[in-house]
Length: 146
Image (cartoon, rainbow, N blue to C red; front, side, top):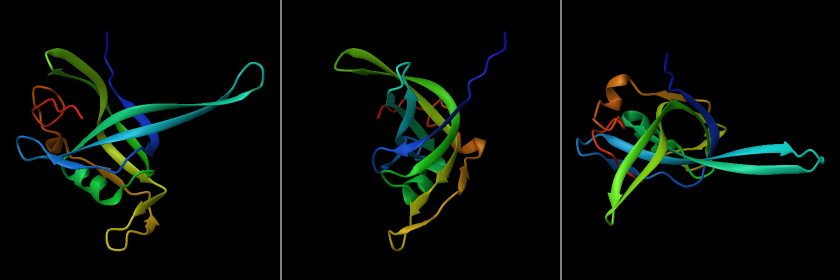
């Protein structure tokens, strides 16, 4: 049987990004996306729901996201699902997250010099070597829960 692990998401950042560095010095940032869905119930009532998804971005792409994106920024993400495992206070924990291959800025992005909005639509694609090939599959050679 064939396998496919590909995710496409579009949403807004729930917080400003923090740039960190893995053990090997590679830049990494974690985005939390809010993805809204509006729908009508059978009775005709309009409802909304929000799905929150963690997205991990590595390399130069992480630096670009940190520089140009802020809370509320719209992004289109293409990537793959990854299950991260870690131990906290003697308890094993796990989290399903998305490892980004491409991040496209949607709407307005913050300007580095003035902080004001500037046109977006810019796509940032990480070359395969910026993802690394660590055991965990997260690209940094380590499981990094955020």
